[in-house]
Length: 268
Image 1: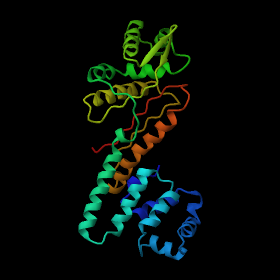
Image 2 (image 1 turned 180 degrees about the vertical axis):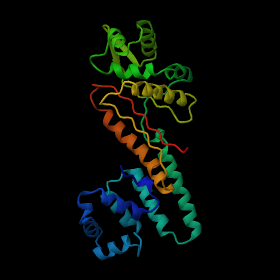
Image 3 (image 1 turned 90 degrees about the vertical axis):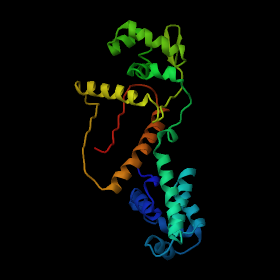
Image 4 (image 1 turned 90 degrees about the horizontal axis):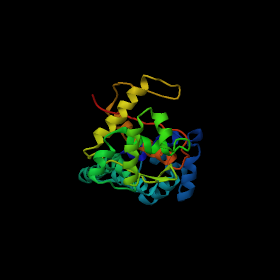
């Protein structure tokens, strides 16, 4: 999914955005010209690199592009960068642009959280996939008892009971007449946490186990590649946006199945 944070050139962003629209955004520039009270020819000159947008028109354009508040500020920053009249000003604005891009790459700023865990709790909660896995399984109506968890996971009842006890004690779950209920609290590990590597390892091990019992509903994809630095940066910008969109759809959906998403993107 296209995101403005992939770009340092606002015109390039707009051109790429138009490609994602029906009929490649036919008539969009005419509508924009009418909105800001100028001619279509003047708008064409802007996007043919003859002149630059002014900030007032940039605000209107950001609304037509349906950009959020933070995205709109970033878009205006790109316009200011393009309009900068000196190399010194361009350098300062570019540094700000790069800083904003880095901030947007940090998932802690993209995915909301509403619970902070102590380091002691984290050391247990992220020690095994079972703690997060069982929380998600219990969200499914047919798997809300210890007995059903034992059958589904094929893990001993003693081990399941120990995990459940921990989750109840620390208010991840509650028990109501023998039925387990998930308390609606999200958690998120910062990428600087000492537990984040263990958390990733837990689920990648589960992924490798799942590969041995491949199911049609599964998808495993590995693609070592060589590519341009520009495209590599674009992909790096797109992945957090994709994760954000997935989380926005998953959150309000009904719990019917459990899945694990692993995305790896690294230099080697």
